[in-house]
Image 1: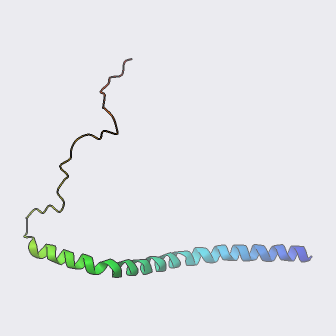
Image 2: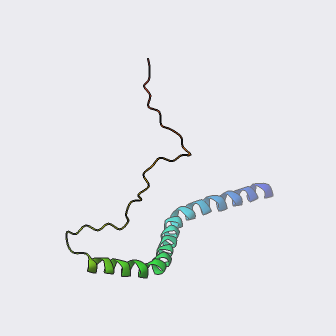
Image 3: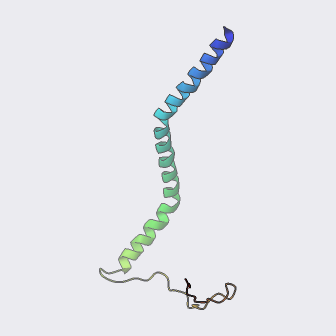
Length: 90
């Protein structure tokens, strides 16, 4: 009788935990995401806001701005090898 009672308690605890986790998991995930957003926003928020404000002051409406110039090195990589064009023969 004791073994049956122990198995029923274990099953009850298992299914109770399963039901409670389905109820509280979305709340927990939302809470963790909000905390992470606050943490990262606090670290990077000042930098982004000040750079965006400077960009808006310098930039006129309709003006094109290039932030990064492309590199001038357009040659092929010598480690890769040579490209050989081929056609499939049926």
